[in-house]
Image (cartoon, rainbow, N blue to C red; front, side, top):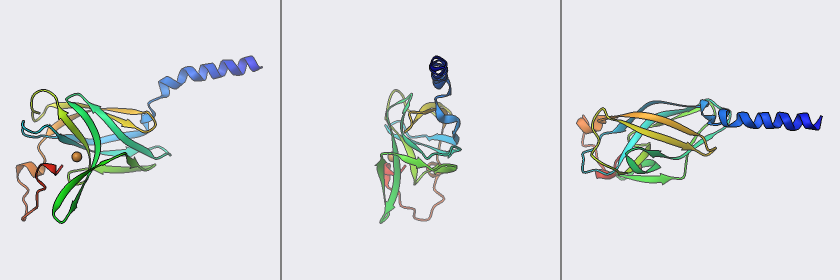
Amino acid sequence: MLKSIVRSLALTGLFIPLALPANGDVEVSDGWVRWMPPVAEHTAAYMTITNHGDQERRLVGGEASRFGKVEVHESREADGVARMIHLDYLAIPAHGSVELKPGGYHVMLMQRKGAGLEEGERITLELHFDDGGTKQLELPVKRGAHDHHQGGHGHHHGGHHRH
Ligand SMILES: [Cu+2]
């Protein structure tokens, strides 16, 4: 009896690694990386993250092929000045989604390695979640609407801090 329990636990254990990246629950759509002039060492990735699971998921960071460091940031504007705040995590509510977009939440890609980014190039980005799960993405490099021209009415740019 005990023996069979132990045995079934062992079998269950074997299956854990296969089931592991609890990330059937997390879906990423509309992801892209913002093109930057070659002088820029940092840029940002934007996307929509949807959590189909019953538990809140927290995006805590990541790794990217072309960058030395990846952080979760939020841009906030106060008195016409955009600032970026490094967040410990970004919570994706159970059965909810969060949009990462210019002027708001973003995945900051820092310390670029190698040549400047080319439009259309694909950046490999792995997102890390608080449960140890990861999500592997390949995101195209694009120009932001902002980067062509803002179509804007005296829009205040926060210089290179605006992502
Ligand atoms: Cu940032």
